[in-house]
Length: 338
Image 1 (cartoon, rainbow, N blue to C red):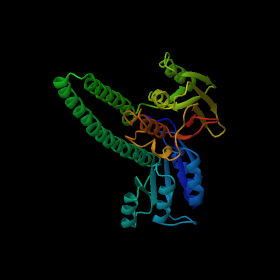
Image 2 (image 1 turned 60 degrees about the vertical axis):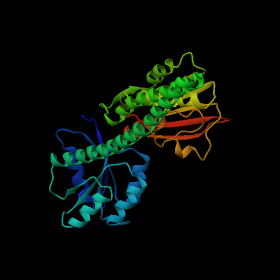
Image 3 (image 1 turned 90 degrees about the vertical axis):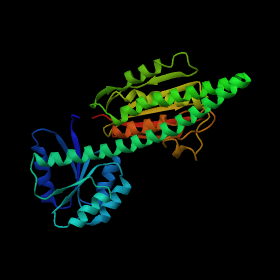
Image 4 (image 1 turned 45 degrees about the vertical axis):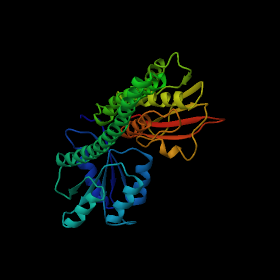
């Protein structure tokens, strides 16, 4: 997949080494890099937590934490960013263990130049993406086998009883199981957008939201949309809003939804999607992102918000859920503007 700017965070204590890395990346003939740096682990973790970087180049000899402990702490704090470890190549055991702990690869100082170092970084990014795709595929396979098999069992049993008793409630049960299976299969198309991402481009948030809300004309939800913004995303962005809106229609009981779009001062655009419904209990909020999680009688495939979170993370953004005031639920999405 072709790339735009690759944002790299260098966590390197040695200034000479850091400056040389920046210089090498600035001379890349094929890919444009935007470099930031930190000289200590804590500083690096803070920067990586607050901003989106496509990859981290990390030296394990840091003043506030050294060796594999530094990698372990970073992965615990910022688990999703691809990491390339900078090494002199002499400690093979440590290199192997760092990969076991979650680093994607290594760059041996100074066995690279303006051509090979970008390749090492891109390989780390691609490897991390592939790891995420494999996890998603396992989830999809599990849900397909479990939920659709259950639905087919219900359909078969209900139709058999209906054939014998001619009781309409068993026919309704079979029809409901068919509808649930169709919903799961439709969600599989959205999962395809997660595991087969297209090239990122600048997208008009307001136009995307307006296009999605038009699909719900005639439903019991009224929409109030305000604000403008452009973000870096792909065609799966619409599924993010569609799933959140559909979730609110099915669960919240709200008759109005407010969608506010506003650029921030740190290179992101924030979208706040709020309803005035029954809300989500605090003990349920952390679970709504889990694959297959269903809550209440109106729970459907359990894939909608799982898809939402995966897409947002692939864009380098974040999503959170909180209580709306005076009542209801608000989803807060932050997406990169560049």
